[in-house]
Length: 207
Image (tube, rainbow, N blue to C red):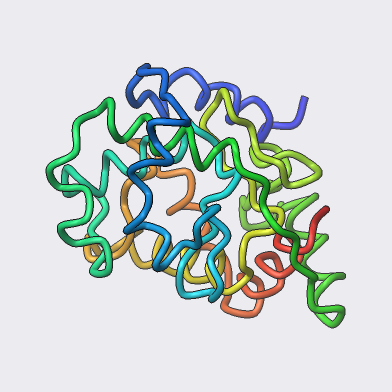
């Protein structure tokens, strides 16, 4: 069996533990008025600066919201937005956005070949696992495991996240909330800017 698949199986058990609170989408919708200014009323933001939250996956989104609130994932534009929210309120918001349908994106044709190679096969001589092993071959992610869908997400946002993880491998000022296994940091650290852009574009364009 592919080592990446085995590793992702192990991550299911311990990486995205998060809260087990079941959210109420209707209650969550009522709390997203402020969120809509950046992320759109249905979680499909209008600009790549802000990620699409629609269809992001309830478990993953709840973890990110909790990490932002508790200081494990500092984001300048999110300062003060969720500071006073309870676990239940965050779970409700996560449930609402997870239930929304994400709009699609198109991959850059010039990047498809390299992006597909990395997404589906990784880079064996550098120990880079295939993205498909955790995020699924069609980019829809793995909701129960907490692995987010990448299909339809802005390529620029995916790329900026990978660069933040790459920085976080050595510098705590980067993104570090991928758990003790550091799977995203270790993966991104081995990718060049060109490879990050290519795999981000390919993943974004998956249907």
